[in-house]
Image (tube, helix red, strand yellow):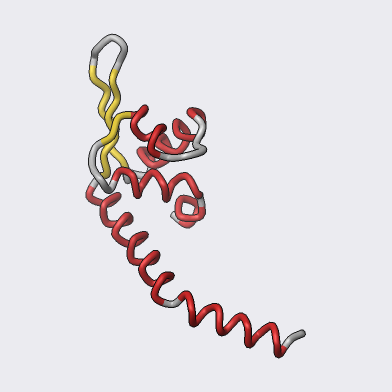
Amino acid sequence: MLDRLGDRWTVLVLVELSKGTRRFRELERAIPGISQRMLTLTTKRLCRDGLVERTVYPTIPPQTDYRLTPMGKSLADMVFALADWSRDHKDAVAAARSRWDREHA
């Protein structure tokens, strides 16, 4: 799981899917800088880990939807909580770093 959280694309896909079900191309357009290959790898890993559900519809061309599973929603909530914590403690972390730099210069 730490591999997933440490991966930049995983977090961005989780954030986008927390807004609701998305098709592959919608995800690709919503996540700046992600290549088709990286999105494919990321969604496959998230599906394998049970965080995302993939539904393929038998249309021509095939349509594929992605949505968070309950476990994926739970992880997305934790990601948002971590982001909130980071924003709330940004000044304290900056002050601690400044003190550290002065003391260890």
